[in-house]
Image (cartoon, rainbow over all chains, first blue to last red; front, side):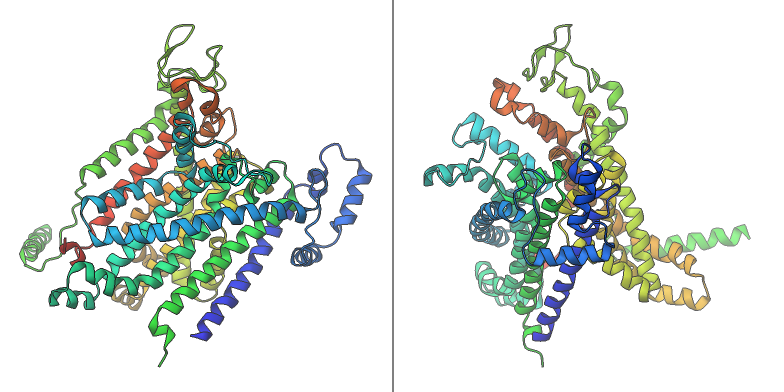
Length: 315
Length: 312
């Protein structure tokens, strides 16, 4: 088992490296002159040359890559195009906000969706199951911004309970912070939970097909007991896997939600960077998001390995 | 000669009918849709037709500025005569007409991108399954790299590198979603390549192309076709999300994702149902994607009749 986990982590590290190559190539080998794009049309030839020399753009691509990778690993992320602030300082402020939001979403959505998924699996075919399956199907098939737009329309415009813009600043009181973060939180919880509920339900119903459950049914064990005592414990592995995968899905969820609510997080920073074509900034943000995603997927795989007794206790 | 074929055929037919009457005969593969599935078919057909004829049946042009006021509520009269059935948008354009024009962009582009993703993914996937060895190794590693990134991040990176135009959007979506098609096509390809009928074809000395076109592709076609619907939903969501972020289809082209974004401020400033300006295009996207999912759900529900279902 240790070998498998170790192998999985090794593959993860290789993937992270491939991701870094992809991010570097995509943003650096773009058509046209990087210096021209970063400095804009009005740059003089002297300033272009100076920029190239400073960033090492006149060196071969391979040299540039290793220089860039070294900078990334040591936290020296360069300076932003706008304002000239260092990227690490820009990111430091935003990263905390995004992590806070993501952590809250995880804490609320995980127990909620496991409970609802179990409920749907316990009473398959009843109205409660039908409502949950149809509702979650509808929710996962619409874009994230659809849910966000509706939340704004009802909670902010029609009812006036919550502000439409997430105004989160350090000087705000706790109550103001809570109101500000409520809307992005609600939308992300809905988006993530819908998927998790469906997968939890499917996981349990899948286990229900195995011979030992059939045996329990034939023995006359009550259905509630079968699901809670027999099926649930054998589904924990897949469920943990699903949770990790869906938290990875949060990475794309935050991009939309932070944009629509102007939540001052990392994704908003990245989108602003994309719009102004601020390459170093986009590279740094992309590496953080992709890195998190890869790490969560590795965790999902390791959880699946640990949860499978056949892999845990080899002969 | 003709006679023999005739009698053989009747023999075959008879055999088939007898076989069908056996108690453990496999279930007949007739596709019966439930009412939700039928509703899905109707909605999808409606939008596909709209993508073709939308610009001709729309009351106004997508870029035509009609009034002096933005965010008029649905049913408002236009100065020169006529009605805004769904209200007007930020730039005093007719929302209904823009949704009809937008069907071509959103549905059309997504459809082309999905088709392209299938062509890329199935070709590479079958090639990997048939050739094995280094081809499989290299293709699978490239694929893993693409799959290891969140799709929206990949989209953002490509847009920041290449800019945003319709061909680039189609290409981006096709490459990203080809990777998941590749996985499925490769899995089915590998499964089929070890079947007895493929082995006997190889023993007969059939060429590799004959095996691909006569054995592998026909047998993988049905599961791949079911998957097409789901993939199309993902592509619609991806492209409209990029448009929503302002990085997808660019104005003045009407497109549902950017229409939501462009009219978002209506919810704070407009009065009454004028505030619904971003809701209508969002509903158009939702109706299309939910409808596809309803059809796919109906088809995949047919597979399986297990004990858990009987317990109900």
